[in-house]
Each structure stands twice: as structure tokens, then as C-alpha cells.
Length: 592
Image (cartoon, rainbow, N blue to C red; front, side, top):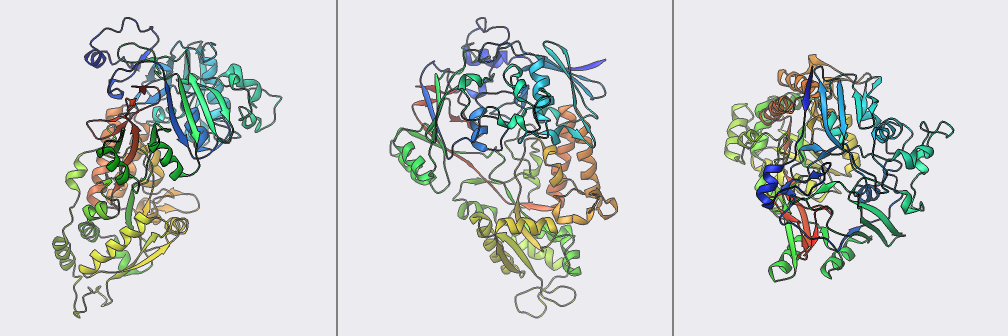
């Protein structure tokens, strides 16, 4: 018996938006979520974006290069997709899939589509991509670790031309999220250039495929665009893929644009000037540039400037941690006391930090899941967050016996020593160093002395992982699925740096005897979330984890910078949703 996951088209919403039928859509087409459309577009035109560097290669898995990733994300697509507006999982090249009752076998039914050169996409392409590229340890950008469980890996089998089967060593709740990052490659173009698929080749040969001097008609994909021209260090031009398999809510083929152009502009101020001149259509901007551009918009410039709720992993949301294993025994006992951590949260003036550090362009954080992450965010954490309340913090500290006995303005520890500790922060991160200064000020008024240690972020990161700190401001990027950050948030893991004694160093095994009861529960929740295959069940586990973090405060989350975007008004379907999220993709954009 199988539990079947079948994803249908969003017909009802599409009809509500379009006011028409989808009869003209081909049977294999995927109707794009109406949430990505402010208007139904019209075909034609060019969308111009910018990059700060030239691509090192067009081989998505043969290089580690953000520029290559940005370009090839328009050329290649995965079996399972993340919705760009909601980040929920949807069908991609896999039209549907079945999950066995034990969660160890997933059968994918492939969409009958073509590569951009007209060749059919088949199960052979999936088997080639997963076996010989994604899980190839010699491919520079491989993702083998994500499909490895101990000494076992996920195995892939071909059932027939349109069906493949993944055999998991154990149930893996994040499997579909991980797959959304695995872009499919064409076996008929690359197998002869890939070790494993071609036994005559030496290890690492795949990395030499699809370099920037490869004839562009040899580079094919299933994405909305295909490569058309590359002028070295100047521009990359992509053209519409006539075989793309997505349609808008009225059944019109996508993308609307005929061409997608990336200008290579290394200087961010030059990028800004070109945007202001109308040469660039869409630009991610800094908080420093936001006020000026917003003023231009208000004054009538033909642009739109958005401060969207953060949805991306970076910039990383900073948090404040206390070392549960601090060398000083009194500080160690204090930092392990949830009452003390609660008082510290009440001394964090988040509104002031958002105003002064982020120029108002930030939001209150999750714990740590972002509010825009509809799949996993637990709204209860907002109610549990302790507001800035210095008086309540002082009362808590008084109740713990931490009083200013000698009248010098600084509270004393039970030993009679001043209550003081070091706060480490990155000097090369303006937000972090500014936060540290504001925290020192607030804590001093509450009778707690803080000594700032401002050092390079890399050194601060090393100190954190070595447990060589008392308190610290640190940051890790979010991921849409909490399981992909298990190494950070689950006790007994290498990046759970504020309580390293929960992990045995050499073997990196959890030490349950060193964990608090709530930490053992967090450990259990992550283990359950990993093997659960039902999305609702997984969310329940991670909801409880977020509530534990909000209550116990192993770290105190401070704020998250907003996503800042500037768009020419002549470009449609780049907009801000009702939830305050910036929405827009090259394949839904159109020229007004």
C-alpha cells in the first residue's frame, strides 16, 4: 500500500484571477501560481538585470560560483520546486510522486517535456544527473552529503522512460526540499563528458564541461531561457526557450520576455547609476541607497522601490548567545539560568536597533524561522517574545540575588565580584558592532557591565566554534526547511556552539547527560522531523521546537534585515504581496 502525493493545478485560483478557462493549455503544462502575477502579461521585450562578476563556467555543478548559479537557474529546473512567492514545495519536472508507507521509497512520475533543443526529457536524464553529477564526489559543486546517511547513499532506479524511483536508506523528511535544489542536466549532451557515465574519463573530467567557451547551442536545459550570447566581462544574453513547460493562469505560454540580459557591472555604485538611467530593470539595493531611491520614486521617477519582508537566507539574522560552558563557574551557572537569559532579552531594545542600526529596514525575528516562511513558521513565537522592559529585567535580576551591594552602579555576583562579562562581535559587520554598542549601553543602565571585544568576523566565528567566548553576537543563514540547519539548532551538533559539552568532540556524538530536559526534547524533535514524511506532522515537530527556543532562549534572536529592491515601472509582475514579500521572476516579468 502506498501513500500518494498528487499535486494538482491551482485551477480554482487561476480561474478567479483569469476569468477564463485553461482549455488552451497543453496537457503537460504547469499553471504557475497566481500569487506570482499582479497582472497577466503580454509577450515580447527584454529584461535587463546585473551581475557584479563574470561567470567562471556555465557548469552548475562543475564550479562554485554565485554568478554561474544565478545565470543557470534560468536554464535548468528541478524535479520538485519551491514556490518563489510562498516557498512551499510544488511539482516541477516531476508531475507527481508516490511515497511508500515506510517512507523509504519515492516514485516520481515525470512530466512529458522537452529540452531546449527539442530532445525529450526522460528518466535517463534523472538517473544521469543524480548518480553521476549531484552525487559525484569529484564534481566541484556536488551535493552528495545531502543524500548520504552514515555510510549509505540514496539510490536511484529507472522504472520506465517517465518513471524513476529513489530508494532512501531511511525516511528523510527534508528529501523533497533538498531535491528542489537539484537541477536536472541532459544526459544526451553531457554523459560523454562525465566520469562514471563515461568509464574512459578520469576523475574530475565533468568539471571541464560547459565552460564559458563552449558553443552555447550545446548548453541546453528545461528552464524558461537558453543561452544565446556571451560577451566576456560585458554581458550574458539568454533567449526564450520555446519548449518551456509553464503557462500563466490564462494558459498563455511563459516566459513573456523574448530575452533576458545580464550586464556585468563590478561596481555597485555604477550599477545604481545605470539603474537610475534606465539601463537596468531590476536591482537589489542596500539600506544606504534605499532612502535616496525612495525619494526619487515619491518625486515622480518611473521606478518602484520595495522594502520587503525577508525571505532569503542572507543577510543572516543576528543572534546573541551566552556560553553555557564558560570558563568562569559563576558566569557558567548564570548563563545556564533561563531567568537570566529572559532578563537579557528584556534589555534588548529591538525597535531601537531596527531604527538606528537598520535605518528602519528590518523586522522582528522568528525563533529562528522567518515569519514569511509559511511552510514552517509558528506565529506563537511572536506572542512569546519578551518586549523591551528594563524594569522587569531589573526585578528579575534582583530576584536572582544579583544586586548592587556596594552602590557603584554594578550588580554583584554571589562571590562579591562585579557582574561583568565580555561581549564579542564582528568589527567588520556594522550591524553587529552597532548592536553590541547598544546592548552594552542598555545593560550598563541595568547594572550589568559589558566589555566589548570587537574583532574580525572570521575570528569571532572561530572563537564561537571553539567555545572561546563569554557572550557573542553571531549569525547563521536561514533555510526554508529547519532540518537543513540541524547542525546548528539541534543540541549535540558541531554548530551548537553555545553548549558544546552536549557533543563528544572526537566522535561528534551527542552527550545526553549534559543536556537540559528541554534540549533533549529539541534533539528528539529534530530526529522525528527528519524521518517524518508527512508535511503536517513535520510542521508540528518544528512548531514545538520554535516554542521551546522562544521560551528557553538558548540564543536571543534580534532582528532580520529586509529585502530591498528597485524596479523600473515599465516592468510588470515585480511587486510586493499582501504579506509584504517582494515577488518577481524573470519568467513572469513582462514589458508594459
